[in-house]
Amino acid sequence: MNPLEENSLDMAVKSSKACLEKANLDAKDIDRIVYIAYNPETFVPPAAIALHHHLGCKDEVISKNMNVNCVGMLIASIETYYLMQSMKHIKNCLIVQSEYTSVLGDPYQSTPYIFSDSSTAVILSKSDLGNARIIDYCVETHSHDLEGLKGPKHGFTHFIANKNVEEYYIDMPGGAAESEFVAQTIKRLLEKNQVDISDIKGFFFSQCSYTYLTEVRELLDVAKEKVFYYADQTGYTGASSPFVALEFAMNEGKVKAGDLCMFWTSGAGVEHAFVLMYI
Image 1 (cartoon, rainbow, N blue to C red):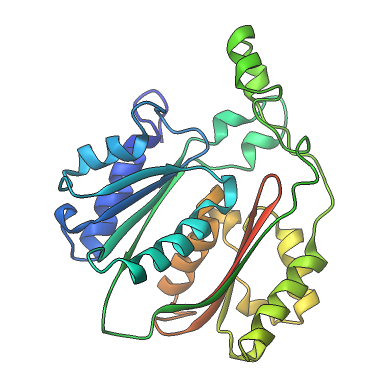
Image 2 (cartoon, rainbow, N blue to C red):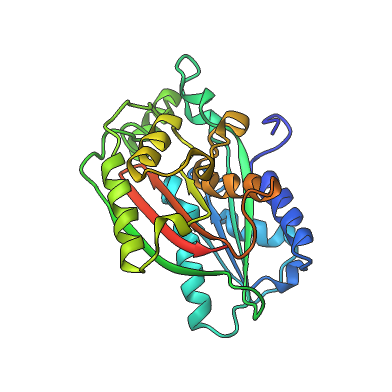
């Protein structure tokens, strides 16, 4: 985006309209909106409500903002999937990540060059067609390092009182990757559901670090061509990164509807989400 002419809400509207068109749906068909962002264009009103307005959705819609950092889109998908199962009247849900992340990094450090400003929209729909469904999921929160990746550095109260923009920048510490934990959790999830790892057609992991992704792949002993990485083309898109990788892989014919796939990503704090699903 051009920050002089656009903002993250503009991107969210564009990606949502493109997704609706691709799904052959009208905005009036949407029953729930989840808007995922660390720094949405507005907190009041919630960006989800602004998106609802700009799309022209019906009144009977649950609209909410969600911020669980880079794990947001997987968490939203898990919650929405099971909500749809329990509430018969909810048939189509729009999940949108839209983030102006490059502004979060100190321009004199490497951080802003990792991130890309991006928006990704996904629609979950009830259907009697196909085999798409979540088989199982696992979410774990390891809250042992709250200072490792923090923004604003001293909290919003201090940031507002001091009006120092540098407090808003996020540093990217090296940190110890939890590759062993990630690999073992995936193995447990597959064993629990009696799924052989060879049956997985695609692994869609966090695109934040190629090294981290490679470590997990090697611990799982999975062929390189089954674990997809596209951040060298897109930059790191935050919460949507596994879904961006899925879109690329599907467009290239490397996976298709009905394939069994494994998703994993993590967010600052640290929180991990794993989802085993037929796409």
